[in-house]
Structures are given as C-alpha cells and as structure tokens.
Amino acid sequence: MTNKEIAGILNEISILLTIKGVNPFKIRAYERAVRIVKDFPDPIEDLVKNNQLLSIEGIGKGLGETITEIVNTGKSSALDELLQEFPGSILEIVEIPGLGPKKVAFLYNELGISSLEDLERAARGGILADYKGFGKKTQDNIIKGIELRKHALENRSIGFALPLARQIISELKSSGRIIDISEVGTVRRRCETVKNLDIICSTEYHRIIINKFTGLPLVKEVVKMQKDSAAIRVEQDFLVRLFTVNPPDFIPILFFMTGTKEHIKAVMPLLQENGYKLEKNGILRDMDDKRATVFTEKELYEKAKFPYIPPEIRETGKEVAIYKSGKGPTLIERNDIKGDMQMHSTYSDGSASIREMAEKAMEMGYSYIAMTDHSKSLHIANGLDKDKLKVQHKQIDRLNEEFAGKFRIFKGAEVDILSDGSLDYDDEILNTLDFVLAAVHMGMKMSKEKMTGRVLKAINHPKVNCLAHPSGRLIGRRSEFEMDWDKIFDAAKKAGIAIEINAHPSRLDLDDKRARRAKDMGIPIMINTDAHSPDQLELMEYGIYVARRGWLEKGDVLNTGTVEEMEKWLS
Image 1 (cartoon, rainbow, N blue to C red):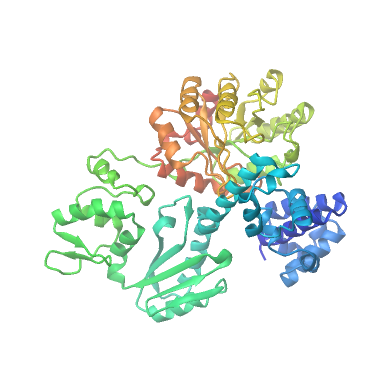
Image 2: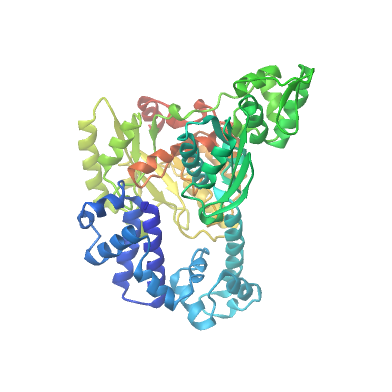
C-alpha cells in the first residue's frame, strides 16, 4: 500500500472526527499524521513490516496501531465505525473550497445535507445565504466550487495520468512481446488535464497483450475487449484504452493518435506535396498506395520536408508554418535545469532536513537550491519568525562551508504578500536573504482591482526576486483569483523580477499560455517544484512540460544558469 493511499484513509478519519466534534488534540494528531505519511520519503509499509513505525516523530502508539491495520488489511476499523455514523458521500462535500469540516458538520447536523447533490440543490435554491457563516458570497463560491469539482471528476491532472501510463507500459513491456509502446493523445502532449489515457503498442501477439492488459491488478472494470483493442476503468473511475497495431504501422499511428486534429490537418498537405498520404486510420501510404515505412516520427516529418515538432506544441496547426520557416524554438529539456529555487524543510512544513533536500538535489545533478521556508504569518505551515530564520541561516552557512566548490544553498524565503500588498518580513529580515519569493496564500477572494493592487505593490518591492504560483489556483480544487494580468506582466517586466512556473502537478502555475506570453515580453521565468520532501524534487519534469508547451527555450529560464550566473542575477 502506498504512502498516498495510507494518508488518504487517515485524512478521511480526520475529517469525520472533526464533523463528529471529538477532542481537538486527537483531530490535530490525525491531521499531522496525514502530512507525515504523505511526505515520508520511504514506504511506510516497510516500516510497519520492520516494526519501526513508532520511530517516526509524531506517530504514537494509537496512530501506529491504526496505520498498521491499514497496511495489513487495506482498511481501517476506525473509519468503518465512523462511516456507520455518517454517510460516505459527506466526504465529497469537504472537497469544495471554503467548506471545512466544521461547516460541513453544520450543514449535516442542522440542514441534513450529506452529499454534493444536496449541497448544490440548497445553494442554487438560495437556502444557504440565510445562515450565519455563509451568506450570498459564500453560497456563490460553493456553486463555483461544485462546478470546479465536476470538471475535476471529468479531467484528471497530468500528474495522475502520466505515472499511471508509465506503470501500465512497464507492466505490458514485461511480457517481452512488445516491440514499441507509447501513450498518445493529451497525455503524450503533456496537457495539464486529461479525460482519459490512450496507449498504443506494436506487437505480433495482439490477443496475448490484450489479455495481459485486461488482467492487470489495477483493473476495476473491463469496459470493452476486442482482438486488437480494449478499454478498462482503474481508480477514480478513470478510463484507459489500449490499441495494438502491426509493427510497420506504429510510427504513423503514433503521430495520428497524438494529435491534435489541427496539427494533423496542417501536416497532411505537406505530406501529399511530397508523395505521401496519411489515411484516417493512421496508415501512411505512398502515391502508389503502398504502405510507407518510417522508424521514427522524425522520419515522418522529413517526408513532409520540414523539421520534427515536439508533441507538446502540436496544438493549433500554426506551429507547422513556423517550424517550416526554420523559426521553431529549441525547447527546454529536463537536463538544462541546474537548480531548484523553491522548496521547504522541517523548519516550516516540509518533511525533510535542509541537508536531505540538498543531497537529493546533488544526486539529481543540480549545482544549487534555494531553501524557501514559509514566512511567519502562515501559521498553518509553521512559518518562520526572525529568531527561527537566524537559526536556519546558521545551518545553511555550515552546509555551504561543507559543500564549498560543489554546491550552493541560497538563503531564501517564500514570503507572504499580505492583504495590503506589504510583505510578511520587514526590510531588516529581507536584507539577510539571498532570494525573496513572494506569494499570496490567504485572502484570495478579493476583488480583481484589490488583488491586482496587492500583487503590484509586492512586485515593486525592491527586495522581491520572483512571484511564486502567481494565479493561486489548485487544479480541480481551487479557481485562480481575479487579477489584471496586463498590469502584472507590465510591472514584472519593469521591475526585472521573475515569474514562477510551479511544477507541482496540482498547480502548474503559470500555465503554458501565460508562460509563452511572459517569454514574448522578455520576462524571466523560474521553474521550481515547491517540494516538501526530497522525492518531490522529481516533480520538476511537470514544470518542464508546461515550459515546453509555452514554447520556452533554455535561455528563457533563469535556473538553467550556473550557480555563478544565478548569484549575479540575484545581486
């Protein structure tokens, strides 16, 4: 059982205990356990097997017994007991932005609302606005949240779909009967959200591969099964389809199924001009109607007499003319990144020490990181006050001395932009930092005018280096706040600050369209992970996909530079 799955069960217990109104210390213990388990670098399952679970700080005897039961049986008797008191559908309501467990408890106990359907009926009927703690604005936000939730159920994050694709591909390849295999469609184009997952493979053993696919352990339901295709449903009711093709047809079908329709329509006339045609089933033929063989997509593009176009930017079809003219970008690659400038340690809400984060970064080939724990006002994330920051800086100094010549840790902070636009640290503290990352974390329901003014004030602060996850969205969970982006980009350009692409799959913020706009304006970009544990540093790849979809090249991204170049820019 994965750490994520264990944390999910603990979180459900925590929510139901809050609704029930038990001892708050017990609730906080569960909330902390959720964070510990989710971010723990090693499999909790292994610690249970080796009787080492209680060695984790924050996991006492009672929680240890609950986690052990979850690992050994896949369920929790504590959760089962709570679900006898409350309907399971009540857990869906807590997912709506602005509705914490306490408000859900009121809705359930006072109004009998126990499902999203009940909640939507009450909100659209204007019932909630009459009750204290809600009001019309909250009611409107609940309706927006329900619509966002529905969209999330139809569209999964690339951070969910891509690891799933890799898992399925790995298991199918283990059969030894596959020649080529790849995800296609929106997942291959690395879109931020996807509706389903399509995979194609070339093989001479179609039936064997289809049988293996439909028999995978993760299958919840076999939706369709034919001799050369099948569809299954996995966790979260997510649809996965597999298509087996004959080896000579793999590359043209890979191209055809990757899409988009607009891109294919732009390429087909160029193929025809050069003696080839792509049929509706993805088969490539020459003008004598003979199958044409290509071994790579690069060869297919060469047959149309223009350069290979990466999947991430095969979107509108306009990219074809740009590449044909020789003006296509050389997109940024993962190995271009030399450092990560947003992460958190145990000093605030991270699960690992500064040393552990630095050692993982070195293992990944980086030359530097910035340690950017939260500023003091973000109490929920254990933000650092002045004294705690001084202690952290002394530790960073010691580590920099130890790593001298090999690696650099910049003294940074993710500093809250307060409601009036001022920063959460005064200039005395800001002067001790190498890197100031400014971000909005609270008060996101301001008017467009007020939020714009708030962020503009922070951008124009002389100590701010970068604006972090600038829209504030959480994909499928929280809409972005309203802001005048024309003014924000203009101010960032004039102030010479960077804007962040936050690589965490729940954020991917800036999105690809705004990243391209920043590039066109000459605003520098940083791609950072916002990692709260060493393994989350690997999320950098998702930020790279956003950057590539935004047409970004190596020179557009600051943290592709050397440590000396980063030092120079910061100074």
